Image 1 (cartoon, one colour):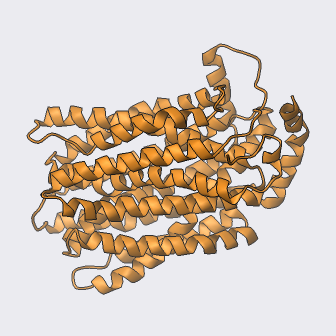
Image 2 (image 1 turned 120 degrees about the horizontal axis):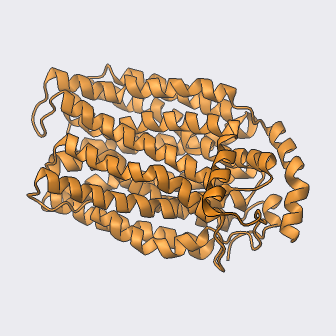
Image 3 (image 1 turned 120 degrees about the vertical axis):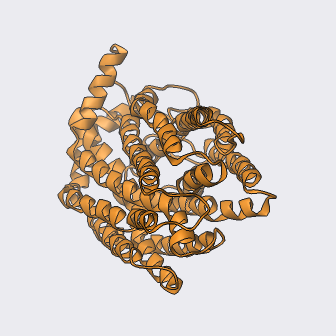
Length: 464
């Protein structure tokens, strides 16, 4: 089986098999995330015929629970001990339940009242979000422990990002194709959701089968009451300035990109006067550019500092988003060019921040003398999900406030709202992240100092 021992994780280059097996998990997870990011809201409003405000409020329920479950589950994984490993055990037992609830999200019964629709969406999405956290958080945390080499992390992240890209392509491009192949949209979404859930469960199972965590985990602190332990670990994480700068920047970028995801289908259909068949073609262009740019960004990061590379990517994407605002009917030929510019910048977001998180965890280990990987990924995931949900709520609110009416030509007011959510607002979010990245202090040289400062203690923990 693939995977390093605990002592090897500090120095050994990961095998190609480990990197490829780890990347498979991202195919399934990101497939679900992309499908919901791009199509869930328009499925609720235009197919299930749920009022936008009702759908947005129901989705918000899951995120209220998310303010607790991400850091809580992160703390739990930090203290999990099992014969299957600290994180891998959650992948083993979470694969099948995740597959089931992922399918249920797309099966809203017809004819529901607004109250019943609210309850159905709130319950199914909250269950999905809970199981997604239980699987995705340990999956991400495994990467920080598989290797602690500054550049090897970037390599592992590049493979994981390639898997994420394939999943994102499936979620945003293949799902509309599957839906159109069905007799009607409602049936198409239900069947596609079931297929996607099955594939996601199988992808998680591959990681659980093929990737092994270090055989010996780090020593933990003396036993303490659960609440005191949670509070101490949480406060220690919140004192990590590089992590806070990174999570703030990544959260703003996630907010901006999710606004684009949620509004893009409306933009293509109503602003460009296209059809749902145009969306897969445009997404294929965007994601194709992202995929090609991953290899470029890997080389850039090998030569530049990570925060500078991330910043450059944001400049590319923000420029493209501002340009997108001015494109209207009859100018469809310009859309692929603009999407290519956005895609080049998005490539940086797909690889760089996820290679930076483990570096901030090393910094926290140096400060606290304890490695709390799960809590860091819990808080990173919390901010990411809050940003996604806030963007979804904003999209629903703007549609409602501008008097959007599904399946008809839109008013100038509604079109203005759609264009705003596709261009200027996302670009503003990306611009606000730039000062945070400029202040980020962990360079390649600084990371070397951090590793040396915790190396003796870490090695003694491994040996114990």
